[in-house]
Amino acid sequence: MKIRSPFAWALVASLLVLLVALAPLLWQMLNPGAAPRARPGDLPAPWVIERSKTGVVSAFGLQVPGATLADAMQRWGDDLQLAVIESRGLGPALEAYVERWIGGGIVGKLVLATDVAPEILARWRERSPRRQVIDAQAQRWALHRDDLALALRMPIVGLSFLPASRIDKALLSARFGAPAEDRPGDGSVHHWLYPDRGLAIAWDESSGKAVMQVVAIADFDRRLRAPLLAPAR
Image 1 (cartoon, rainbow, N blue to C red):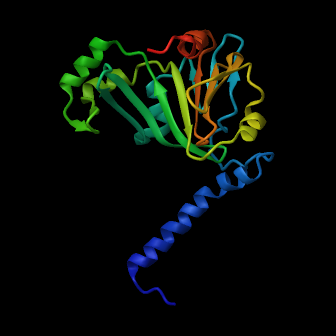
Image 2: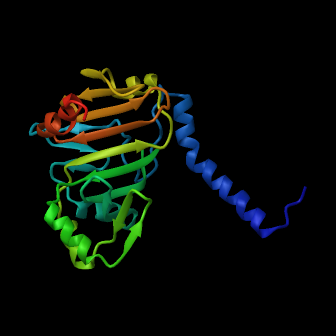
Image 3: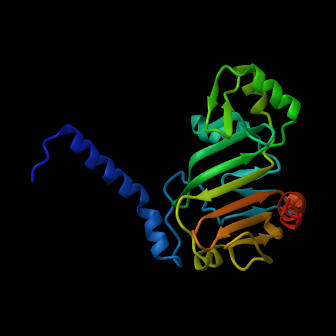
Protein backbone atom coordinates (compact mmCIF):
# COMPACT_ATOMS: atom_id res chain seq x y z
CA MET A 1 0.00 0.00 0.00
CA LYS A 2 1.38 3.39 -0.94
CA ILE A 3 1.38 6.17 1.65
CA ARG A 4 0.63 9.49 -0.06
CA SER A 5 -0.48 11.68 2.88
CA PRO A 6 2.20 14.09 4.17
CA PHE A 7 0.81 13.51 7.65
CA ALA A 8 1.27 9.75 7.27
CA TRP A 9 4.85 10.23 6.14
CA ALA A 10 5.51 12.47 9.15
CA LEU A 11 4.02 9.83 11.46
CA VAL A 12 6.20 7.08 10.01
CA ALA A 13 9.29 9.27 10.30
CA SER A 14 8.48 10.07 13.94
CA LEU A 15 8.10 6.37 14.75
CA LEU A 16 11.45 5.59 13.15
CA VAL A 17 13.15 8.35 15.15
CA LEU A 18 11.59 7.01 18.36
CA LEU A 19 12.74 3.47 17.64
CA VAL A 20 16.28 4.65 16.97
CA ALA A 21 16.30 6.67 20.22
CA LEU A 22 15.05 3.74 22.30
CA ALA A 23 17.24 1.08 20.67
CA PRO A 24 20.15 1.35 23.16
CA LEU A 25 17.79 1.17 26.13
CA LEU A 26 15.85 -1.81 24.76
CA TRP A 27 19.09 -3.59 23.94
CA GLN A 28 20.41 -3.11 27.44
CA MET A 29 17.20 -4.28 29.14
CA LEU A 30 17.36 -7.46 27.08
CA ASN A 31 21.08 -7.86 27.85
CA PRO A 32 21.57 -6.64 31.46
CA GLY A 33 25.04 -8.13 31.70
CA ALA A 34 26.44 -6.07 28.85
CA ALA A 35 27.57 -2.47 29.03
CA PRO A 36 25.88 -0.02 26.63
CA ARG A 37 27.93 1.88 24.11
CA ALA A 38 27.92 5.57 24.96
CA ARG A 39 27.42 8.07 22.19
CA PRO A 40 29.92 10.92 21.70
CA GLY A 41 29.29 13.52 24.41
CA ASP A 42 27.00 11.15 26.32
CA LEU A 43 27.07 11.28 30.12
CA PRO A 44 28.05 8.32 32.27
CA ALA A 45 25.35 5.78 33.07
CA PRO A 46 23.28 6.28 36.26
CA TRP A 47 25.23 3.60 38.14
CA VAL A 48 28.55 5.41 37.60
CA ILE A 49 28.77 7.18 40.97
CA GLU A 50 32.15 8.33 42.26
CA ARG A 51 33.14 9.81 45.60
CA SER A 52 36.23 11.78 46.54
CA LYS A 53 38.25 11.44 49.73
CA THR A 54 36.46 14.53 51.04
CA GLY A 55 32.97 13.06 50.53
CA VAL A 56 32.08 14.84 47.31
CA VAL A 57 29.89 12.65 45.10
CA SER A 58 29.94 12.84 41.29
CA ALA A 59 26.88 11.49 39.47
CA PHE A 60 24.63 12.35 36.52
CA GLY A 61 27.16 14.90 35.26
CA LEU A 62 27.20 16.98 38.48
CA GLN A 63 28.89 17.08 41.88
CA VAL A 64 27.32 17.36 45.33
CA PRO A 65 28.31 19.39 47.15
CA GLY A 66 29.87 21.89 44.77
CA ALA A 67 27.56 22.24 41.78
CA THR A 68 25.02 25.04 41.45
CA LEU A 69 21.99 25.41 39.23
CA ALA A 70 24.15 27.59 37.00
CA ASP A 71 26.34 24.53 36.36
CA ALA A 72 23.24 22.58 35.39
CA MET A 73 22.10 25.42 33.13
CA GLN A 74 25.50 25.50 31.46
CA ARG A 75 25.26 21.78 30.73
CA TRP A 76 21.58 21.48 29.70
CA GLY A 77 20.60 25.02 28.72
CA ASP A 78 16.88 25.53 28.15
CA ASP A 79 16.23 21.86 28.95
CA LEU A 80 16.66 22.81 32.62
CA GLN A 81 13.22 23.81 33.90
CA LEU A 82 13.04 26.20 36.88
CA ALA A 83 9.96 27.48 38.72
CA VAL A 84 8.40 27.89 42.15
CA ILE A 85 5.91 25.10 42.80
CA GLU A 86 3.45 24.65 45.65
CA SER A 87 1.13 21.77 46.43
CA ARG A 88 -1.83 21.92 48.80
CA GLY A 89 -0.70 21.22 52.34
CA LEU A 90 2.95 21.83 51.51
CA GLY A 91 4.99 25.00 51.38
CA PRO A 92 6.52 26.41 48.19
CA ALA A 93 9.67 24.84 46.76
CA LEU A 94 12.05 25.55 43.91
CA GLU A 95 11.33 23.09 41.12
CA ALA A 96 14.40 22.25 39.01
CA TYR A 97 14.55 19.34 36.59
CA VAL A 98 15.71 18.04 33.23
CA GLU A 99 12.82 16.14 31.65
CA ARG A 100 14.97 14.06 29.28
CA TRP A 101 18.31 13.16 30.81
CA ILE A 102 20.42 10.63 28.86
CA GLY A 103 23.50 8.84 30.12
CA GLY A 104 25.04 5.56 28.98
CA GLY A 105 22.04 5.01 26.74
CA ILE A 106 19.61 5.30 29.69
CA VAL A 107 16.75 7.82 29.52
CA GLY A 108 14.96 9.38 32.47
CA LYS A 109 14.07 12.54 34.39
CA LEU A 110 16.67 14.25 36.57
CA VAL A 111 15.41 16.37 39.48
CA LEU A 112 17.76 18.77 41.27
CA ALA A 113 17.16 19.59 44.95
CA THR A 114 18.12 22.89 46.56
CA ASP A 115 17.69 24.49 49.99
CA VAL A 116 15.98 27.84 49.41
CA ALA A 117 14.63 29.78 52.40
CA PRO A 118 10.80 30.00 52.55
CA GLU A 119 10.86 33.79 52.64
CA ILE A 120 12.90 33.89 49.42
CA LEU A 121 10.48 31.50 47.72
CA ALA A 122 7.53 33.62 48.85
CA ARG A 123 9.16 36.72 47.34
CA TRP A 124 9.83 34.90 44.07
CA ARG A 125 6.22 33.77 43.96
CA GLU A 126 4.94 37.31 44.51
CA ARG A 127 7.16 38.71 41.73
CA SER A 128 6.33 35.96 39.27
CA PRO A 129 5.23 37.17 35.82
CA ARG A 130 3.12 34.07 35.20
CA ARG A 131 1.13 31.55 37.26
CA GLN A 132 0.15 28.12 35.99
CA VAL A 133 -2.46 25.86 37.57
CA ILE A 134 -1.17 22.30 37.34
CA ASP A 135 -4.23 20.64 38.87
CA ALA A 136 -6.57 21.09 41.83
CA GLN A 137 -3.68 20.39 44.20
CA ALA A 138 -0.71 22.25 42.74
CA GLN A 139 0.35 25.49 41.08
CA ARG A 140 3.55 26.70 39.45
CA TRP A 141 5.01 30.24 39.21
CA ALA A 142 7.56 31.25 36.59
CA LEU A 143 10.61 33.11 37.89
CA HIS A 144 11.12 36.81 37.31
CA ARG A 145 14.33 37.36 35.34
CA ASP A 146 16.00 39.05 38.32
CA ASP A 147 15.04 36.17 40.59
CA LEU A 148 16.27 33.66 38.03
CA ALA A 149 19.78 35.10 38.36
CA LEU A 150 19.68 34.46 42.11
CA ALA A 151 18.17 30.98 41.70
CA LEU A 152 21.00 29.93 39.41
CA ARG A 153 23.48 30.64 42.22
CA MET A 154 21.76 28.16 44.52
CA PRO A 155 23.83 25.08 45.46
CA ILE A 156 22.51 21.68 44.44
CA VAL A 157 22.11 19.49 47.54
CA GLY A 158 20.66 16.37 45.95
CA LEU A 159 20.02 14.58 42.67
CA SER A 160 17.03 12.33 41.95
CA PHE A 161 16.83 10.22 38.81
CA LEU A 162 13.64 8.54 37.58
CA PRO A 163 14.35 5.99 34.82
CA ALA A 164 11.81 6.02 32.00
CA SER A 165 11.81 2.22 31.76
CA ARG A 166 10.86 -0.55 34.16
CA ILE A 167 13.67 -1.86 36.35
CA ASP A 168 13.94 -5.35 37.83
CA LYS A 169 15.91 -6.64 40.81
CA ALA A 170 18.46 -8.45 38.67
CA LEU A 171 19.36 -5.26 36.80
CA LEU A 172 19.63 -3.23 40.02
CA SER A 173 21.89 -5.86 41.59
CA ALA A 174 24.07 -6.14 38.50
CA ARG A 175 24.56 -2.39 38.15
CA PHE A 176 24.67 -1.17 41.76
CA GLY A 177 25.66 -4.26 43.72
CA ALA A 178 24.17 -5.44 47.01
CA PRO A 179 22.95 -2.58 49.22
CA ALA A 180 24.27 -2.00 52.72
CA GLU A 181 20.63 -1.91 53.86
CA ASP A 182 17.39 -3.13 52.30
CA ARG A 183 14.46 -1.50 54.10
CA PRO A 184 10.84 -2.35 53.28
CA GLY A 185 8.58 0.52 52.30
CA ASP A 186 4.88 0.86 51.64
CA GLY A 187 3.34 -1.96 49.65
CA SER A 188 5.89 -3.55 47.33
CA VAL A 189 8.46 -0.74 47.66
CA HIS A 190 12.03 -1.50 48.73
CA HIS A 191 14.60 1.07 49.85
CA TRP A 192 18.16 0.10 48.97
CA LEU A 193 20.74 2.19 50.82
CA TYR A 194 24.38 2.71 49.81
CA PRO A 195 25.78 5.20 52.36
CA ASP A 196 29.35 4.89 51.06
CA ARG A 197 28.16 6.41 47.76
CA GLY A 198 25.51 8.77 49.12
CA LEU A 199 22.94 6.73 47.19
CA ALA A 200 19.45 5.51 48.00
CA ILE A 201 17.20 3.63 45.56
CA ALA A 202 13.45 3.37 46.05
CA TRP A 203 12.20 0.51 43.89
CA ASP A 204 8.64 -0.74 43.46
CA GLU A 205 8.76 -4.45 42.80
CA SER A 206 5.23 -4.51 41.36
CA SER A 207 5.49 -1.64 38.89
CA GLY A 208 9.23 -1.76 38.21
CA LYS A 209 9.47 1.99 38.82
CA ALA A 210 12.54 3.32 40.59
CA VAL A 211 13.90 6.58 42.00
CA MET A 212 17.65 6.94 42.55
CA GLN A 213 18.70 9.67 44.97
CA VAL A 214 22.25 10.96 45.46
CA VAL A 215 23.51 13.38 48.13
CA ALA A 216 26.84 14.30 49.67
CA ILE A 217 28.24 11.59 51.95
CA ALA A 218 27.92 13.87 54.97
CA ASP A 219 24.22 14.43 54.22
CA PHE A 220 23.23 10.79 53.74
CA ASP A 221 21.83 10.09 57.20
CA ARG A 222 19.94 13.38 57.46
CA ARG A 223 18.50 13.54 53.97
CA LEU A 224 18.02 9.90 52.97
CA ARG A 225 18.11 7.52 55.95
CA ALA A 226 16.35 9.62 58.61
CA PRO A 227 13.11 10.08 56.60
CA LEU A 228 12.81 6.30 56.34
CA LEU A 229 13.13 5.90 60.12
CA ALA A 230 10.67 8.67 60.99
CA PRO A 231 7.26 7.42 62.21
CA ALA A 232 4.42 7.70 59.73
CA ARG A 233 2.01 10.59 60.35
